[in-house]
Image 1: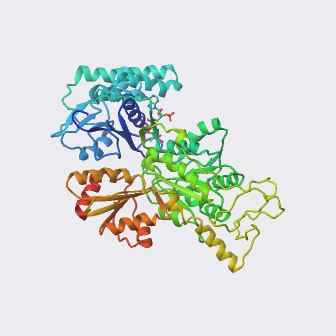
Image 2: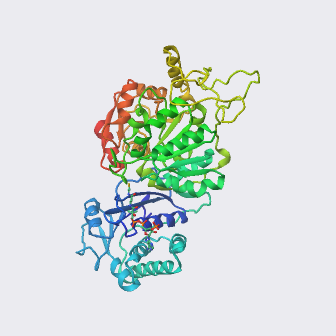
Image 3: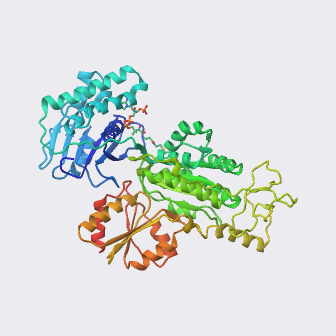
Length: 577
Ligand code: COA
């Protein structure tokens, strides 16, 4: 990448101008050239207007996070320029829509290579439509940084083919005009270019949301019901396209309460079932999560976190639903919360969520987040033959005429489930406390035993799901604990801090409720200082860990709607050490 290990290209402008499409197409082209890609996008909650940004990081090596800053900025308007000029660093490149667009002045910034490109003017005057502005930009970017033009043309066909031949033709003309502008008017003086890698048929580009949908298919999901909500809707969109091919059923419900009720009913009926939502929807689901807990019905709930409370920041990143996921619902309810670290992990964590739900007959929540849900990443195509799925323990009649005891106390505290209509397997399932037979029962002894049963069944969870990776370094001055998409950033920060001579360890729990106490206690015993960076105000994981273990962490919290960058974590590591 022009000598550097990787390259980050950021495109910014007004929502509705096709910023997301142009960024996405750069990413797709890079993958076709055999590069690793990880993207980040952020846009306003409005359909049109406001600042939208799409960033693509390319590398020949595995990419763990969005990265720190960017190398190339393409500003479609004055707002994008105003937001990003203060972030420019020595050696960066700025491409900007000038003259004839929204940007008022020619730019000259010490240490920064500035390329004016009249994208609006070319689109309107030469192509005849402002809509083609993003393709002019794409032409400029492709020509300047040697992105394969053939790949871009293929992607234009794929993306806009459904909109008609004329749209494809206009976009190709826009692309050509951008290329011509660079050839005729600009002299490349920056060092960046995208050296192609080795294209592989084993690689796919997929978003975190789509990966959750794919994981559900690999786990054998049979029923999905959801109500659309940003940033989770794409999970439903993906499954709406693909679940019917596997004879599954998808129901768009009238709200989140109904969607989880549908899922509980389908699972009660024997089907592997799932819903997906975001914070406001998860709030609405609390009563039904309690019901699934009481009924001991396996359900999987993906929560793609966004800025809350209330409608909050619908399109922005936050990790602030952990308290709700772990401690929501009234009463004492047992449930499990997993948190994937990246796009590929979304696939496998979703499979695990189904496995845990079916094995322990509990609600399992997958806490993804806005950054991860919207992120696209080049990942290895999963091999379905390597996916291990777990089936729930089914009831089979003994034949001696004894009544089915749905909530029978067993050695594992998990009781076999029948399905409606199964001979001898008749039972009632409600939100009421019940006897082993399932009939309502409120005696003190029964109540105590049943609550214990619902918690005891999770006693061996940490052994069944042992996905807590400890990256220990001898003589570590500091240990970090990270969860969710912050893990990738921390992995990168740990590597950078070690390169700079600091001794740091890290623990990456994917099980965030109930806590993996053995792994945490062992990590805590090795490190006198522990730092937990999280994207929330209340230091949610840190507080839960502090209340359940002897660890007294130092918290590092940001909550401005954006993820951490590796540099931010490195600075904090230095400060805490
Ligand atoms: N030629 C033809 N069509 C083009 C085009 C071109 N050159 N460039 C873009 N488009 C189309 C895209 O295909 C897309 O259409 P589609 O939806 O049919 O696929 C549309 O124009 C928007 O372009 P896109 O690049 O995807 O987005 P953008 O950068 O213009 O930003 C958003 C628009 C994404 C910010 C905005 O539409 C959005 O979704 N906002 C968030 C809404 C939300 O979730 N709110 C929260 C509610 S709680």
